[in-house]
Amino acid sequence: MEPIIEKYNESTKGAINQEQSLMVETNHLAKSFGSKVVLKDFTMKLYKGENLVILGKSGGGKSVFIKLLVRLLDIDEGTVKVLGKDVSTLSDDELNELRQKVGFLFQSAALYDSMSVRENLEFPLRVMKDLKNEEKDQLVKEALDNVGLADAIDKKPSELSGGMRKRIGLARTLILKPEIILYDEPTTGLDPITSKEISKLILEMQKKYNTTSIIITHDMECAKITSNRIIVLKEGAVGAEGNYTELAKSEDAFVHSFFE
Amino acid sequence: MEIEKLNTDDEDAAIPVDNNPETSRNAVQQTLMDFFMEVTLLSKFTARFFKQAIIPPYELKEFLKQCYIIGYKSLPLVGITGFIMGVVLTIQSRPTLAQFGAESWLPAMVGISIIREIGPVITALICAGKVGSGIGAELASMKVTEQIDAMEVSGINPFKYIVVTRILATTLMIPILVIISDAIALGGSLMAVNIKSDVSFNLFFGHVFEKLEFMDVIPSVIKTFFFGFAIGLVGCFKGYNSNKGTEGVGESANSSVVFASLLVFIMDMIAVQITSLFS
Ligand SMILES: Nc1ncnc2c1ncn2[C@@H]1O[C@H](COP(=O)(O)OP(=O)(O)OP(=O)(O)O)[C@@H](O)[C@H]1O
Ligand SMILES: [Mg+2]
Image (cartoon, rainbow over all chains, first blue to last red; front, side, top):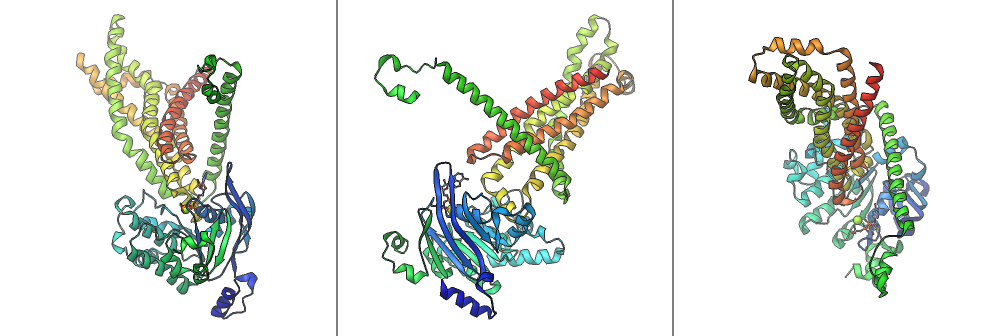
């Protein structure tokens, strides 16, 4: 973990202390549904400007984990701090304020069926009250260009393919340029070429806007391109942690299986 | 317990007869518990609606959109049923009135029945079917596909945006639909009267409004607001709290209709009691 802090302290060239640059912190996080234990004891830290990839088995609780970060699900035990705030103690208004700084790409894209692509992208902009129409149009156009779907602007989500929906979902997540972005399988269901483009886009977001991200993926190519650090989720806790090259050399059979 | 019994080779235990008073009492208890649970949840949901409806910001654009969808798009259906209602009621009532030589009462009688009772209830039931199921299914599928979660994480209150606008829209639109349906039903009645006798437009409506009193119109208009509210509330409640994946979508649509229709009848009964107290 040390090198990363150094690296980003260096890159931002400021006297950022460790406390300030800590974006997300969870301590002994636990979550169960009925008798099914999903997360047991999950402790992690995420620093400013870092791309953290989470690997794990299907059904292992990766999506549940990022939902806990924005309180879409309630925590059973432990604490979650996002941007220095303990999410379980926030009032509704404070929570909304925090959520505006956190982008969330859903695994299912979660586009609003009743709205066109343009309206989908404009929806998150509603929180910015004093935005002019031209500025809105500009942002929408830019976001669509980023994902290479400028001509889909007037389509309805039902007219799009799965991969296109995913990319529109990504554009909607990025449009507010959030400080922290949570990507739930951004490249699943996309062809290798588009996958690579999306991975590069994630990297570009990080470079350009100095965003901090958690990326859940099964796509090792994406993990390789985007990650500064990887956590392998195993039985509801951190199974292994390190950068791509470190983990690729791991002796552990479970960790190794991801890199085969 | 049942399964264990079935698995034993013991002959008289092999037939699964539930004559144990303990289990049937438990089943009743469970049903009652579920019912009270549902009522508690619905009350909380209603309280939340009022709270959210009062606090700004108001989602005016979405509200108008819902008014259009709920009101305008239901017009053809409501119009057709209203027309048929007027025609049928007139044709059916004529022989009975003729027996007493009171055929001239036909417009007034049909008018009063439609405006007081049949118009509001039939229209509300039609809307419970069309609008209630639509809202229930739409919200349930938004829930399943994480659209509601997506709104929540963009810092927009989905309850306000989705639920409040829809309930307000039904509360406002159902009364308007009822009034339109009543008017079309009276038109249908006028046509049906004219099959056998020759009654002019002025004469017909003169008769209807002569017999129609303030106490016929006002309570029946007021109750339609409650019908509209109930239809929106139940649809949203069932859809918003749906939790069972795609299967839950159909279930929400179905139970919205059943529950909303039942509520319409119950409210109508209460309304009748209240009006008869005052007159
Ligand atoms: N709302 C919920 N209610 C009950 N159980 C849930 C809920 N959400 C998730 N689960 C359960 O939690 C477990 C973890 O789910 P999660 O979606 O986090 O898996 P995942 O790691 O994201 O898997 P995948 O890679 O397939 O997306 C699953 O067993 C799932 O059934
Ligand atoms: Mg998942």
